[in-house]
Length: 412
Image 1 (cartoon, rainbow, N blue to C red):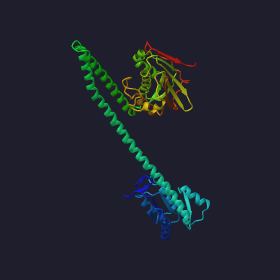
Image 2: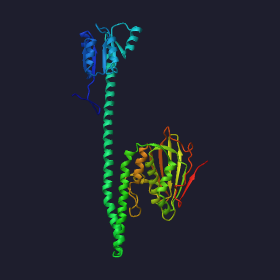
Image 3: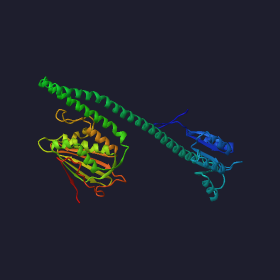
Image 4: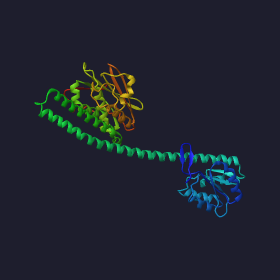
């Protein structure tokens, strides 16, 4: 099997041209003209022979003489055009007949793309054949690229499926011994507290805390690995409900920290409900976690509508960080503070970034030490997305924990 290397694409096929003429001298002349084009030249001395060749050869161009015995060029072209296997092959007629309008029109109606008059001008022939050769190569390169892309997509899908299965199995296998360790430590701490000294109790308590951190890390890794596989389940979601559910899930942390959360009315969008809730939950949890214990944490959720984007802002009054490290906060396991000072897995914001990007959006952050941080989520506006000023939902406060506050802000 021969291959043609074009640029960085290796083409399996070589460009083939078919020349059809009942005169051997004309075929010989055309061969000499096209000899330097690095193409395979196949000739046929009749329309019938040309049709036989096309049964097993794929050509990028046919140079077809009009005047031939038995089956002329028009009849041959009509059969070629009506065959699904060859209907897209361009045909250039070769003719010595005067190019009156009726004759030319018949040729184009038959399916020809051009005419070349006899006697042949070699420069014109070379120029036209080269154009069709280049077009064929471009089309072949595109098809090869599409094949490679399709193969890569299949490989990526298989890799993602394998990763998800690995994460699921690993998560289950890791959680079991962690649960056993924590249960055993809790049992020892409770049933043998009277014989344990203070150091032993502290060690067991530290073991339980370490087990809980391990469990959280396993859950975070599992969530991170599942993003690619589950984001295909998109539907119309109300971000106001997403926000409220996230706040309800964090109610104990909010109550403990005394966090004050205010929010403007948010839009609806097309997305994955569970993962968008995780976005809200992770950002809010991150703000509550990295707070200054000397003052209550305030978190403001706002909405901006631009021409082609919906922007959700999360602004907090936490400890903040140096802006030059902004990119690192979204990298897995990158932490800007000591683990001893603040709990966390180091993967929450990485998961947020991955989810936002799988929704076609982007995320960025501005921060200042001692002032706080502002996370900006930007989502493209889809044709079916409702805007906040077009859809104003009633705020359901029944699910909001009683001991913390959320303020809904609207200009109406």
